[in-house]
Amino acid sequence: MLKDIPYVYAGEGISAFNYTPDPLSVTLTVDNTDNKVIPMKKIAEVTKLPTAMPEAIPETTPAKGIFGDVEWYIDLGGTLHFGEGTFGDMKTLTESPWKDYNDLIKTISFEGSVKANTSMSHLFANLTNVTAISGLAKIDVSATENMNGTFSNMTSLPVLDFSGWQTPNVTNMLNMLSGDTSLKEVTFGSSFVTPQVTTAETAGQLELPNDTGVIKWQNVAEGTVTEPLGEEFIGAYKSGTNVPDTYELVNDTVTPNFPNTGSNLRLIALISASGMILFGLLGASWYKRRQNMK
Image (cartoon, rainbow, N blue to C red; front, side, top):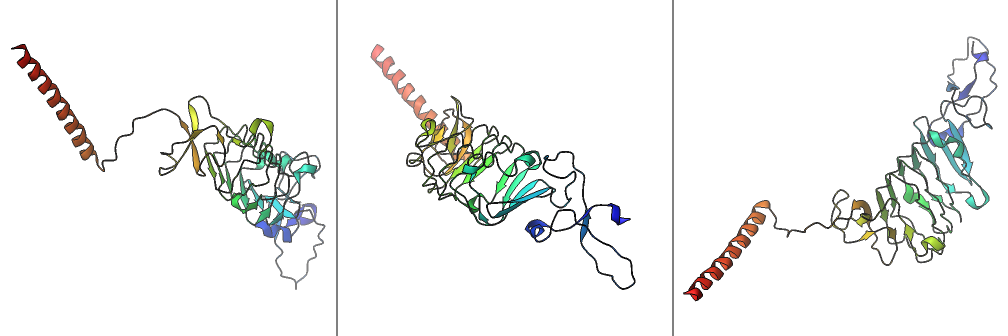
């Protein structure tokens, strides 16, 4: 019988907010006239839940909430979805609203335009299973002042794209990307500016992770993400000094740059011609010395 099984009204995507994932008290009666279908799903048991939550949560949305006036939810595939609105201010919070679900989150998707508040401190920190963020350009960070640790310790994230961000008021970028051990690609646009950054260890720049004495961040320029051709090799991004571009983590080893001959055959011909000229000069020198000896 259904009366002993907790069910919830089912919704999908952001539309889940038009329903409720909380267990409802439903009275079911049997007659011969009502043939309507009510979308419902059984509540699924989960192994890890925050102490403030009930013993079971809905199968449709493992977690959801509202941050500022932005509706968010986590789907069964582990994607953290955001609707539109204005984020709350992390200045008054010690942790993100989804912190208790960090282990469930594998990707992040912004599906509506979001305006960030003055502080984004540690907003996405410690999401160690996140491998991709889509729609990052939909966040308006023009009024944000504090990005301390915003993406720190996202140890599985390989790519970040800041090409759509405007950061004229950010004064704190301390540890913004620290601990991002898988990060290999970062893109900066012309509006991602750093001169106003005043934090002592990163004044005027954003420190990039994972660089060493020989491993640096190289801009792509006219190359590709797999074969960057830029001339900049950096460990921190400083707007006005470094060009806005996509930067790849590479081994900063000097390699010879051969002329662009257009084909391997022309390169071989060039090398052969150079060799013939060299041998000709050596031969002429030898002949002149023999003549002098006579």
